[in-house]
Length: 378
Image (cartoon, rainbow, N blue to C red; front, side, top):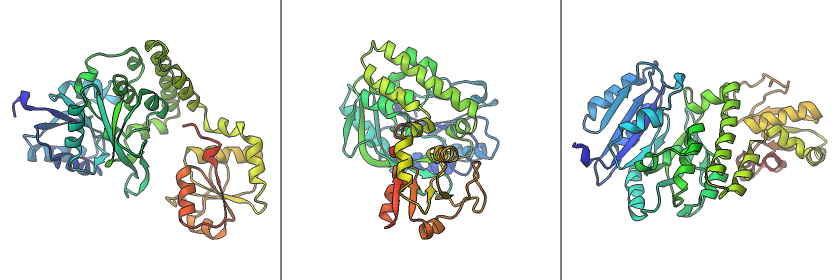
């Protein structure tokens, strides 16, 4: 396929994702597009069999897939894999992203997004609805759905929404978007940065169709590596705050109000709980027989710390995964099964909106306290 024929380049960044890479690549090669496209795979020196699987696809789809194999892991030396390693290899006017553990769920995704950007030349980026799924069993955790209609998302909405406002696997943009580098990008370039930059010219066109899936914290993923390393996580947060401050300066205060609002979202969950200490303790006192916590994510962890400091009749903790039943959390609370909680609990503390809604839908008759109300910022 001649270089000038390529209209769309799909970037697939992969590292140690052998259990998932086939589904990712299958969802790309199945795309039904009426213009030529290519798949640019960047294997960041995988060691778990990912490389061998990619080679199978490279051989099978010689006219579609181009692969670049690293001899040294670029992430470990601080190289920007997207901007420095993958994007320069793309020959298309448009670029889509699908990392090696994510996948697309609609074979017409590229065509739909291409038609949008052709129709709206003043817009640089298009995104769509997606599902956030658990790593191995692909059970839907939630939908990543900022709006319930096809609409242009404003820069203000994107800035305020944070990095998880849109799923990275849904992003489709003009390659020219990255012809120049803004100052805020130089501080840190990742999916939130792409979304902000993609929105600044004319907003992001959002298609309210579920066409992609984001796997939550799979082994080897960027998010998993950052979340597990407390030092890296803290460093990431500080850089994210710094890039917003730089964005405010670079745009001469145009988005100052929403940037200041977004900066408040970096208040740790435990500190957010502390702000509502009196109200929350009063709420918990309404359940004299005690209560159970459902959800062991970051909000759940903050609530456990809160209980360990302020007391309260927390009888046990459960989580959808039902792992480590019978063990104790680091704060000494017993981990029990979700079935036991449903049978025993007269009051359940839901660690987020999704759990609270699910308990209501399951017909739970006891008292539900949704602590995301006390920790709204994320």
